[in-house]
Length: 90
Image 1 (cartoon, rainbow, N blue to C red):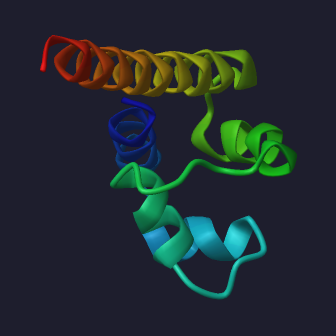
Image 2 (cartoon, rainbow, N blue to C red):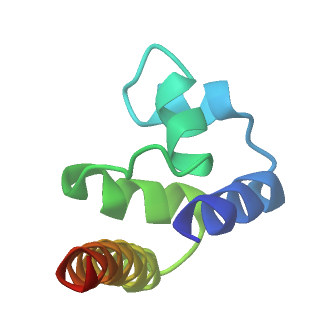
């Protein structure tokens, strides 16, 4: 979900992925693309600067990061539980 939020805020700010990447000290927009496609998350040391550039409260970005982490943990635990349960039945 964070990726979609970042894209919405970036577009609302009128920044391209490349412009945002350069403002954050990256040479390639690939970092921003990966964040928006939820392949990775921004490092914590960039969150405050990112929030400032996107004109959003940094705590909001952190909340989205936490929510994403919760969903990943839940999916992993559910998958492992289901796998273990199937193995016990067999």
